Amino acid sequence: MAKLRIGFIGCGGIANQKHFPGMAQQSEFVDMVAFCDLIIERAEEAKAKYGTPDAKTYTDYHDLLADPTIDAVHVLTPNVAHCEISVAALEAGKNVLCEKPMAATEADAKKMLEARDRTGKLLTIGYQYRHFPVNRVAKSVVDSGMLGDIYYAEAAYLRYRGVPTWGVFTDKSKQGGGPLIDIGTHALDLTLFLMQNYDVEYVVGTSFEKLGTLLNPNEQGQTHPFTGEPMGWDNKTFEVEDSAFGHIKMKNGAVINLKASWAINMTPEAGGNNEATAVLVGTKGGLDTLSQQVRVNHVVCSQPSVTTVGNKIPPYIPGFSQGPAPVSVEAKYWVEALMGKRELFVKADEAYVVTRILDSIYQSSKSGKPVYFD
Image (tube, rainbow, N blue to C red):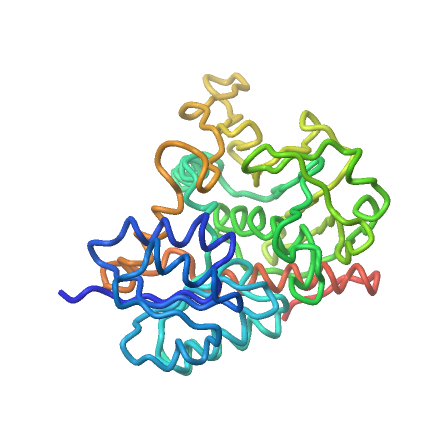
């Protein structure tokens, strides 16, 4: 069987931390043949490290998509470009893995779904938190029926001081938002995935632009979450929210509270942690991943009990942690889907609901009113 030929549009941080290493581990089935970036040096570096001898580099993604031999592309650009490039790739006959979030707005995400349906190509979104070991255990617990009917959930990704100072994360024109769309998207996707409930009645929320501009970043003692190196941000060009909160009412009556921040005066003990977490409450029991373990509270022999399922697993950080990588699982499942051996693990229709909820929180914050779904 001929190898799949994969191209990459965007050769920045997420490409190097996640997508390139993940796909390199699938070298038995994949050739990495094309690399595109507005900064040609990045594309050339990626080609030298990961590409086939005849791999090509580009600064214009249209030129990459014009290659009829490419089977699939990874869209790894700032959020606002996800829709335009993904739609063009689908219409060029390519299967697409787009980085999270699916798009910066619900309208753009819908265009991506329409292009998928129109072309019949595969479209998936890079929500790797589903593959983290602790979350895979949590999914097993939920699927076992141990929680019963889940009627309340909390989805959180709160950084006490964790403003990303690389890339364009604080540039609203390129990202569409701050921590809500950047990391809150992971917590929300994870929680909806665990619940397997995507039928939303309405959303209400608020975003805050407080500490990003008020704090003096040089006095915060912030360190890079991957390397531990000291870092600060430019509070004069901080254009997005620093925290956001949403209340999501599902059509079956269940409720989800979503919390996301890059900077918040909340200690780790109070929830200001550094990972996506979920709390689920059901009729038979509850579950949380707050300590990077799965804790189940339920009744055993008529006694309220807490059961820890599995061992505590340190959070995986792409490019720095040791041991099995969730990104390897994401890459493996994607390649198997391309080969027709499995269904897509992250369905674009699910990711669309995530983007629609996030967009609705921003809308609600501006209007002060709930946003109702059809």
